[in-house]
Image 1 (cartoon, rainbow, N blue to C red):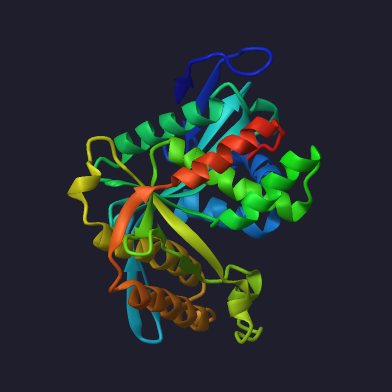
Image 2: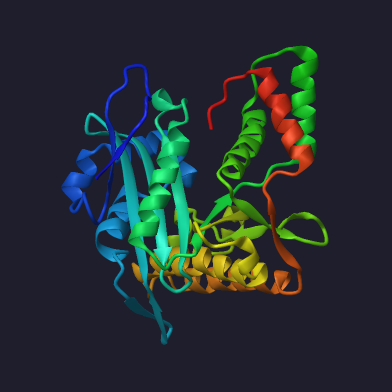
Length: 329
């Protein structure tokens, strides 16, 4: 357990961070923190994994031991260590961070980070994040940094939305407008934390990575696979080096390939297929083929790590902040 020092909330009180695998060792203790209810409040259904899968990954499957299974006669192995960091006030969860360390690449994948709406502000999210990274470095001393996905934002669309808000003075945003702005705000938050985005050096734009569909229908062998592509999403991938690792010391093109394989094969596909190798063989073939296509499409690109926000993006973010519209990330 680690104490988070600082003054947070309307009535300051001690906050602590507990982590699965060290402080929380069984399902009853994990569920009793209220972290799964917090997870449900923070993230929309389309972004959430099932609570039973989360418990299985954290407490039995992804605990640092090699795992093996067979798909169509092909022997598959992987080794993951997933941890959930739980920020507590009065022994109840008010924040969470779900990370997975991939032993094959020495990369840590940031699955989810969130703070209860009632506790946002005063830098709590940033303080919590930095404490988690420090704890991860202690847990996994070989790690080279953290990778994550963010939804791409459309600069032209944002320019139109912000210009209209400035011109009309309206304060309410439609759902699609909120989504567009939130994408920028999330990227801006990670930019402040020191993340860089994998980019095409010639086109001067972030690289898009196609994620396999995570719709539950993909994992049901009784349902057709013909419409799986409808559930695919494009993401930008970001990386933050471990303290002491300089970006200049890392080959961005190799890191890109490792990050794509770690997120979408080692962590996503293998974890899902391991639960039912026979019934999910089609999903394995689909997911690995999609990842291979991404690798092939980016093989000749000059990959660079660049600032998350270009100057034009930072200007848009400043204009949004001047509007003083409350839209929590």
